[in-house]
Length: 200
Image 1 (cartoon, helix red, strand yellow):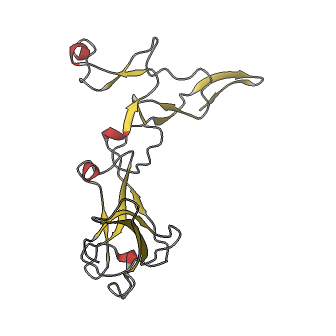
Image 2 (cartoon, one colour):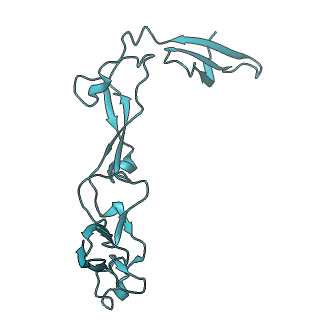
Image 3 (cartoon, one colour):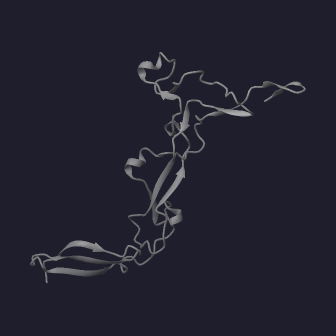
């Protein structure tokens, strides 16, 4: 009869990419106990499997790379850019049973936002920048003692902080380099059985 159906639930098998769905609802205008269940098959409308997921974004592919609007403006987060693979709205095809990667990730070049202040360094505020002879917002040495002291037990090389380190979990590669630099230990005079020698 007429009156239509008010759908309360759409069910499908989560383990498959089936074109079959079960609609559950109630007939409009009928008593509250009169429920209805329908089986709907979209395979006649979508008569082919989507193709070329590996070419997502190309004109011939049925897929596109999509980024949520709040991420699109910022681009990279923690050194990587994440794009989601989805079927183009205009593609009249079925994704099918083949498992596709949900996301595609690539590492970005490092930039200032990928760094934080290293141990014994802190951000300099506007008011104290001039007093510290530093730029506001930069990481400035805040521990006692000499900033670039050579380790007492230095052998071969040592790392000297520039005030910054990569944020934990950040995967950026290349680009801006603000991390510690490696230096050779200064020559040291040591005494031995045959007199003295220099080691570096």
